[in-house]
Length: 591
Image 1 (cartoon, rainbow, N blue to C red):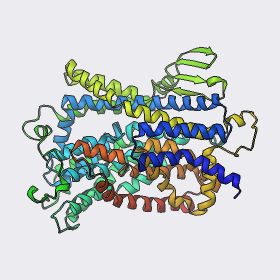
Image 2 (image 1 turned 90 degrees about the horizontal axis):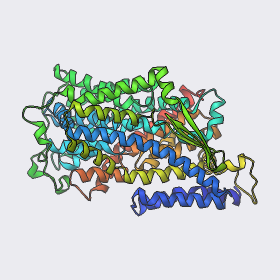
Image 3 (image 1 turned 90 degrees about the vertical axis):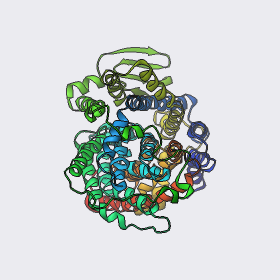
Image 4 (image 1 turned 135 degrees about the horizontal axis):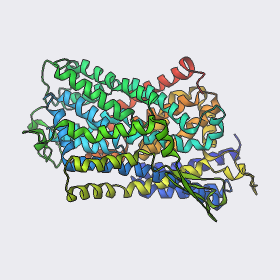
């Protein structure tokens, strides 16, 4: 390998090294570290790739437009969630689950798995653990057990979390850079992303069958009688755990393939949860004994935080006569599912929302089309452009569902205002982090775009963008064994950034380029990216910190991460085997 190649590889790695050092090494928050990482990417692009400033600015703005689209989804998801929390609907949903069984193992399955996956499907971005952990604490779980159960339980749903954001943006946005290659196979970027998401659903559906068992096993083994660790109590709920995993996986995979990426996690949690609850109420799969935590006086200090188990305001919802029916509590999410299916399945509606009448405005900084989508093309005279499909993306329908919930729950102005203010307040950190991380990735993807557009370079410029350079170096270094480690790449991204969406944005194009270089099925390796990115969330530092904060257990981040390495190792190892089997044996001819 020549010195020039080594310099190009080192330069391309520089932004990712900055992210890793600042986020993991110095524990900087993403809103501080990502702007610096973007700056490093911009400097590298300018100095090494001779990328003109207007192209750097255009690529960054393209990333900013994608970030706004994501943030609209996140805002809608949070508005709906906080509306239901302020109305008491979330407490009622929790009470409905908790009333089914007093067995802690069953409660882990119902709340730690099904409720957590449901909330991931509608909100994502670290919300499930932050909502479910306090609910488990209110039922009497040790704080540490509540955090572990919620983090492990929601992992499989993150693939399609926040109504498809990790796919709609996480796959599609970076893969725009390889659109000519995808188009050569007769696919659009959106169609390709949906197909890759289908494979991601197959991978994670298979792996996810065991995740209820892992969540229960973690709680039973680490939070049973001190000094007497045993997995024996798991046997009593083994059929329930496996049945729950299958009940989730089947609608999860089918929805991903036949409806789209917005609904798999949401639909699987609702359908699977309903099937399991009905089965338990019919008297099947209920364990013959009741497992309970040891007496609280025997709990080690690191199990509990500043909030007493069973003592917060959620307690009121788990006892006494419920003031709201379960059907009414679930209604806004049922409405959301109907709206999303209607806007994705009814073709005239879908076409109208993705197109519709537009006004065209030609300016010195580019051409703008404004209507049911907003598009900015030829940014600063370059060939780069971006768009915000505000009417079609799930954010709009999340907000509509939240607005319909106001009269449904007879909420007053104070409750509504509080929900919207809380949702808005949660947007500041993601706004900064997402804008700069996607801008960074876009710069890395487009470092050679000016050369492809006909510009000339004054010196020796690397052949290919930063992402292509890194992909080629990885392919050369690892070669045919790459499918085994493809999931680990996604896990690294989720661990560093704390988000499957950001991990996908950062590494989806990388996985595609590695697959192209090695002559492997690109859809399978892009799908495998989501294996690692999903499980990486259980050890993502700021996800863990946020969950611990909700139960008053600050300072146990390292302990939670160490415990969660157990499901991480299972997921990555078996996920690598599955990817290798799919690539070489089962589906080697997939594009």
